[in-house]
Image 1 (cartoon, rainbow, N blue to C red):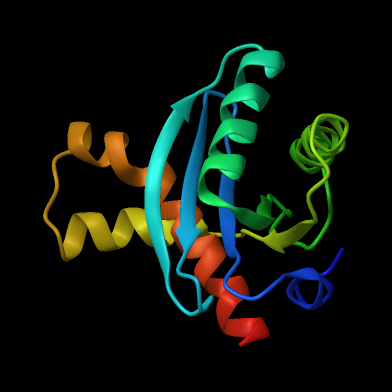
Image 2 (cartoon, one colour):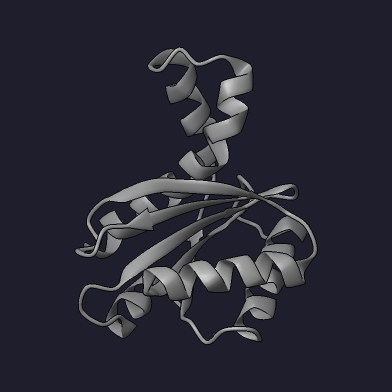
Length: 150
């Protein structure tokens, strides 16, 4: 599903969940009800899919989230490699657990962009950056999609 199709499937006031899927963590961000601003939410340490999906489903139901923007780690040359396949499989597995629209968003350089901001502008230590970079990357991904579908 494209972000534009995702937008069309949402009800009034439904928020979007942005996800930056890493091999060890899942960074999450949430849009406001008007779907203009993305804010970092939190980072989930990955475990078994069953446990991770249960936490995501609980969050989706608790917050009344209407859809997901999932970062797709496309290569710099535009090709989809094993990480993209793993991300698409994660989405398929999640769809088997909960019926929610999922759109993919090219996440090239999202983590690098967030790292630059955290180093230069926020002057964060490496340890502190590690604690926030995934949820900040999720917000960066979600904000890109929100700006595009405006």
